[in-house]
Amino acid sequence: MFRPVSTFIGLRYTRARRRNQFISFISLSSIVGVALGVAALIVVLSVMNGFQTEIRDRMLGMTSHATVLDPINPFAAWPDAVATLERQSVVEGAAPFIRAQAMLTERGAVTGAIVRGVLPEYEPRVSVVGERMVDGALESLDAGEFNIILGAELARTLGVAVGDDVTVVAPQPTTTAVGIVPRLKRFNVSGIFSVGMHEYDSALALINLEDARVLFRVGDGVTGVRLKFANVLDAPVLARALARNLEAIGLPGYYEVYDWTENHRNFFRALKTEKTVMFVILTLIVAVAAFNIVSTLVMVVTDKQSDIAVLMTMGMTPAGVMRIFLVLGVSIGLFGILLGVGGGVLLALNVETLVPAIERAFKVQFLPADVYYISDFPSELHLDDVVVVALTAFVLAVLATLYPAWKAAHTEPAEALRYE
Image (tube, rainbow, N blue to C red; front, side):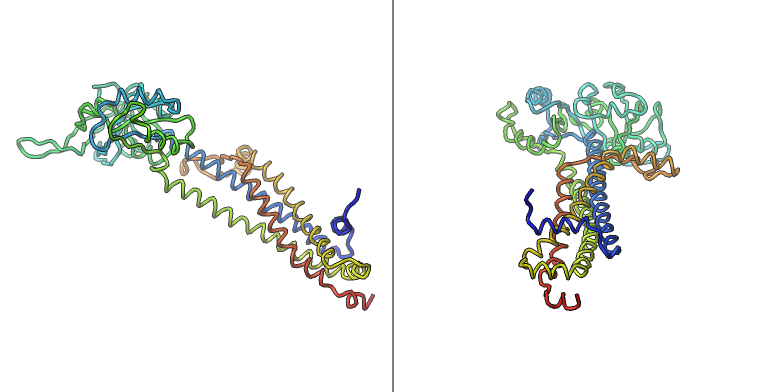
């Protein structure tokens, strides 16, 4: 098959036995360096994707995808609102809630918490708290019983378990003959949940919606309606579309719609920034390997000066000589990239199996369960990450070949053949 002579010679140099074995060693180290850098990038980005998805799922298990609020008056028409919203094809579930800050105290321990009034029959439509109960059940929140469900860390801080009582201090004071006194109410702990997020496990308490109305004096209204969409990533777009069409779907009046990204924007922006920084840092590994390609090609050019001179005397142009070493350097880079992509993808797909095996073999634990909420290494391989890593490595490999190829193209045949 016809091949340009520059490509043929460049590929031949990649497999020909060199007189200088040190050049072969440097070439091999360049391939290994590029492969390790590419594999490390793919594995680290996949693990970070896994952590981001795991944290997002845990967070959104308790946070609604979107919330409809009436910022002026209590949301009194919530039954009609829930029914109307659930008729929308994009809405999977809707549930009313009352949200207020309060102080919880028991046995001398005092801590602040977010108290959320919910309806046990509605709450599973928008959250996974019923699935994350470690003791008790969500259905125990019967109206008028004044039961309360606490996050696991919150219960630990107060030193209570299921069956104990806690005192909830509401921010709305009560005026009596002796003056203004805080509103206090004893609640029975009927359940404890754990979702693996400090924000909720240490500062969230659930009570029945009717009990919340009595405690916080909100009348017949609620704070708002929480929504769940089929695809959480579509929530910002769907929430904005819903906000524009509230009156058209039968909810006249002034309402505001917020999506989950507005409540946790800084957190997910920090995760994205961290992923970008890690990509830049680990790309330096590939850059170091690219410097090895420079060293390899410079030594090859020096070793092959007489060959280059002969080719140029036979009529090969400087551009043709330059293409020879471009082919050689790019071939080294491509081989390393292919090895790195193959190894990185293989490792990324098996991280969740390999890490526990390493922990058992060396009797270590990288993420202790008593310190970290996520004690395993989730991995989520994204094709776009693999493509970006491979393209970045390829660009670095091409850039690394330019100077040695340019130097080869400027070889003086007479000077190179003087002592031959």
